[in-house]
Amino acid sequence: MKITSAEFVKSAFNREHWVDDLRPEIAFLGRSNVGKSSLINSLLNRKGLARTSNTPGRTQSINYFLINDEFYFVDLPGYGYAKVSKAMRSDWGTMAEEYLSAREQLALCIQLIDVRHEPTRLDLQLNEWLNFHQKPHIVVATKADKLSKNQLAKQVKAIRLSLADSTVEIYSSETGKGKEELWSTIQSAISRWP
Ligand code: GTP
Ligand code: MG
Image 1 (cartoon, helix red, strand yellow):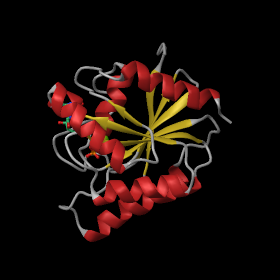
Image 2: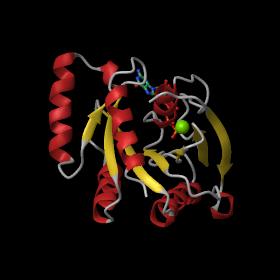
Image 3: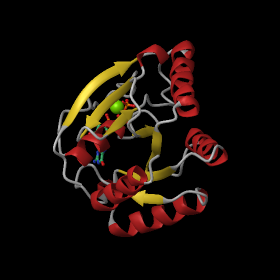
Image 4: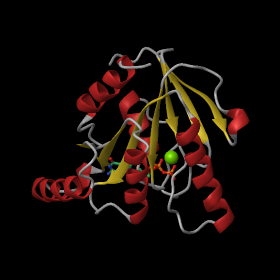
């Protein structure tokens, strides 16, 4: 995909702030610190567009990026970060779940997991939810640069077994591994839209 423009549009903290637009959206979901914002920057070849951080819980709002004036990337808050208050945790969950349930513009949900680990309980829950509600989605196992070739093959096999109802792609935001494949998945989701 040739990126002619990529701009941050806004952050939404509640439903009234959602973008009022019918263009298709690609949403990025996954636990805090898994690499959602890094994946967005990597796909767009823009280093600082989506804010990344070593501090989990950095992205606490729904962030919209408009690409080529054609479609949106939507960076959703991460789940599973234990160090925030219970109230805040459930706010995030509610915000993301409300978005996923209600948003009709969602052409594709990209669920990120860390390729080094088996999916967590919350990863499995989200994945079941996406399958149950028949949301168009794929799983992207990221941080592939952190494993050797052998370890990677072994992990990917285990992950594909445990998320057998979903397509799993491999990625590294560090090296760009998997970028072409992921873009072609995104493009076909957009072209099927609406
Ligand atoms: P929240 O906004 O807190 O939910 O986190 P996030 O999912 O947006 O994660 P973010 O992109 O901020 O990345 C978290 C950390 O992981 C940062 O230090 C990134 O540099 C690192 N990281 C993300 N993707 C990769 C990757 O593919 N490879 C490596 N080596 N590091 C990565
Ligand atoms: Mg983030």
